[in-house]
Image (cartoon, rainbow, N blue to C red; front, side, top):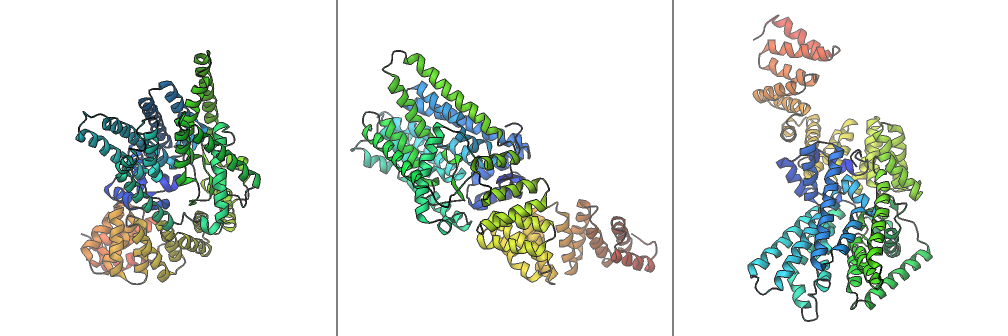
Length: 618
């Protein structure tokens, strides 16, 4: 992973092309992290994590990858400590932790920078469970004070809250705690059931609040589109097949891909086979619940923690995803570890066979994970492998990602063709319309870009960057009055988006509303103090509004920031001329002609000034 690049899928939205993340840890960016619903998610701690990486390491892809790897390794260690602490079975706990560390299904969560939310939230998941175990132990000891127990419970609340701020996947954690109460903590009985549920009420309230926020944000962001795109019956069928698929891929993790497209229909044999597999394992878990409680606990862990991402409420276009197994597979690993140990317990040679077999399994997983990691080294390798595995050359996502690769390589015309295909195959695919609009705009095909951005704002009205790009395209086309509304919407959606303020100022100024344009230009300069063009435009607006001293101040700073910005020198020359500083004005107009010898207005202004007072200055 030390030589891996950022990939074109989601990494730009999360890091490389996100101005708030690229700006590092500033008060403005921290404020944005807690208020933004960017990428149809609300996970402020994840944003802060990316910002901290940029603050410390800049845009070094290697450093970002290594931080994710460090979080994964930390969670692995915490998982081992958690299981060993609860069960006093260090060998089995180590096997589970080793599988968690090297299973190929977990590569996606660790190797994809945009999935930092997985490894970060899981780190807090493990901390919360460790704190809960300490609380449970203290609750069973009469000599422990209420204050002592309360301290551990408070730590559970804090770590759960932090995990939810990284990713709402932790909404199932209180249910997992109830499972652990049954085994291995041995707290759950008919007599204690009510008390244990009441004990977790604050945790349930916390996850309920997180769930509401997540649903609102994803609905506003346009991520929850499946109920318009897919029949309810297909979603239910896909849930059954996905549960079974993850089990099969856990046992045989071959030909894994970054994206598995949702099929138009699922063969009956797949649905029936999945239903039979799930029914058989569920029946076994029920039958062994008393003698082998870890089977029921591990199975319910797997089933329950997948609920938020299994697809009943579909978010995104995929049928299933490797990253969704990051926490759920722990339940199956527990069944494998404890079940295998129980099966081998009757064999005399078990002490020799068990460690050897476990080592071979871990080694096989590690080798396959190593091969899988190589596909994440760059966008080209990732998407070529995905198409090879899924054969999804006609899917919208396939064309979209091919377009991203072409765009990154500067092959814009080919990128336009791929994005157009993606948008044609899936008219509701907002990302395809957005990147198509960017590519078209870069080629000067403004009218087509406008139509693409209009589709983006229709599909994702809360996407500030989409509103901004629509406004910019309309400005470019000379449709100034129409540009004002989307630019105002962009500013409302993301008050920290400097270019939105700047372009809003340009739209207002172009309509002759100089007084109204001053505030957007001021906000643009406040957000981006080194933005020379914004300072120049602010200075001109101030100049035309009669605020001469302020205009000269900002225009002087603009030419310092952009010494080759002809417009800034021209505006400063006009300001100096109006202030009677003829010599200074002449120097500025000469600078304009140095930059652009064909600048007619500057030549006229210079001739007029030198004709009045030749050689004068102050």
